[in-house]
Length: 387
Image (cartoon, rainbow, N blue to C red; front, side, top):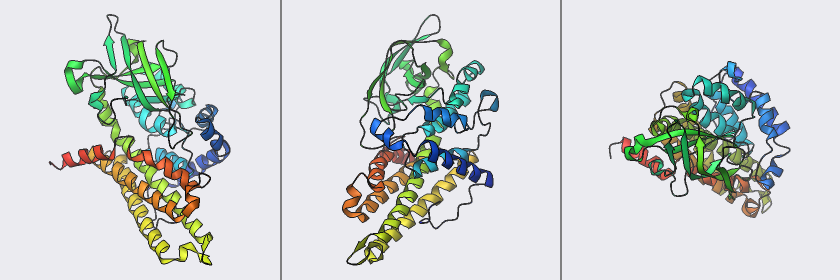
C-alpha cells in the first residue's frame, strides 16, 4: 500500500484491486467533500449509507437473494477498512456493520429474520450496531447486567443500559447482549435484536470523544422494552459463546485498521520531512529524523506482514482467538507509538488540528481500548501459554 512499507503484498487478486478502485472513487465522491462537516456535526449524513448500499459496499457477504454481494471473501471487507482508514474517514461505520454485525446475522438468523432484516442491511436503510459494553462493564463481558426476562408468550422484557455504542445514534437494529438466566453464569446470556421505535428503547448522550469525531457513538437505554420472541437471535443462553466465536474477526479488523493507519501517517510524515526545512535543509535529512523514520518504516512493515498473514489464516478459518488477540494488541500499540513519533517530527505543526497527523493522533488512541483492551488481550494470550 504505502511507499514507506517495503513489502510487496500478495494477498489480493486483480478483482480485489478493481473493487478497491471502485471504493476509492466512492470515497472521493461521496465522503471526502463532506467529512469535515460531519466531524463538526459529530455525525454523518444517513444518505452516505444509502449510496454505499446502492454501490454494493454493504453486505458483500450476504447472499444475493437478500440483496447482498453473495461473496464472503473477507478480503473485500479488508479493502473497505484499509481505504476508509487511509483516508481518515472515521465517521462511516461500515466496518462495524459488515465485519462485526453481519456475521451474527448470517450465522444465527432464522429464514424469517433474514428476509426481514438483510435486504435493508444491504441497501443501507437499516443501520446496525451491537451493544455489549455497559457503564460499569468494559472488557469483562461476563459482568453484563442488562437483563431480559422471558414472558409467558415467549417475548422478553428488557431493562438496562449500554455505552460507547458505535452507530448508536443512527442504528435501526441493535444486537443487545443481555442476561437471560443469572444463575447460569456464562450460559446465562442471550442476544436480542432491538429495533428502532420499540417503546422504552432510547438513545442517551451522543458521546463527546477526543477522536473519531464524525462517528456517532452513543449511550443506549432500555426501559421495559418488549422484545418479541421472534427477535431472539440464535439460541437462548448461547450469547456468550456467540460473542467468543465472533470477536476474533472484530479484533482482526481493528488490526487491519492499525496497519493501514500506520502506513498512511508514515507516508504523510515522510513527505512532510522532505518539504519542511530547518537550518537551511530538509528535516528529513538529519540523521535523527532518518533513523526515526527507518525505525517506523520497519515497525509498519512488521505490522503489515503480521496482519496479512493473519488475514490469510482467517480466510482458511484457521485464525485462533489467541492469534487475533496478539494481532489486536500488538498492532494497535505500534500504531499509537508510531503516530506519536510522527507527530514529534512535525514539531509545533503536529499539535495543530488542521494537520492530518494531529487528528490521526487523537483517532488512534482508542484503538488499544475498544474491541478488548491491550491488557485483556495479553491475558487471553497469557492463559493460552498455560501461565
